[in-house]
Image 1 (tube, rainbow, N blue to C red):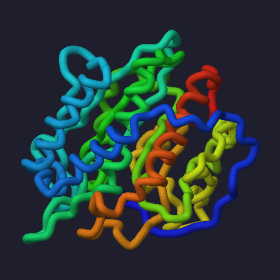
Image 2: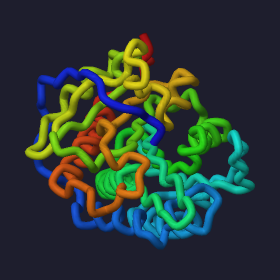
Image 3: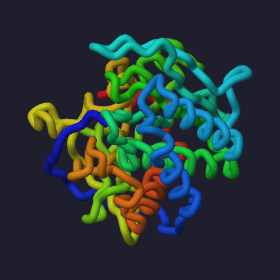
Length: 303
């Protein structure tokens, strides 16, 4: 993830959705542990570790029941960003068909910053945690067919200037005018206050009622914030993949925790994951997806 530090927030009211956990916590944690293992070498774009992560994710895409667009889940692209040259980076994209021709795109980047000399930056929170939650949500909707078509994209190149999100939107699997919303997840698992932020409603206030339907869970609650220009580095608008959707006028909600001492450090390991908070945080995202899938109409969410 590319974000910075803390900001004010507003605790959301009007909780209406149920509290039962509908995801497999054991599998969720296993996905994060596997993706953040030393063997993945920090998952930097274009490396052998990235290829290993792709292999694992392709297996999991098939297991959870995602369908490819065409004959492959892979979307290849090149990265030329500052001093980073990656001849072939790879997004992994699948979908679950809905009854509507409108689309909700769920994203989480699987790349991280890799290795520096002998040190491995495993990126358990940033962003194996978001990918784990993406897989959990896909597994749920494969068993409970959605109203809208749901596209699930594990994106590459976020740490190199949001390149995977840009490549996805430059060569989208569905027409951009059919995309109602982007739900992006980046850092969901390390927080000791039980706080997960739903950022983006400052830009798209029509989404506030949908977020407000999501009831707090025992270990996690949603807060608004981190999306106002006057907040400077505490404004997360341009600090993860949702920004590329926002630039094109596609509404978004970004789920993430505030920065912590392990952000972009070698200590961002699976051992740091808050195993009480994280499953509830992932469930909050799933509950939001269920809410918007059921109730979001085909009208513009822009002001």
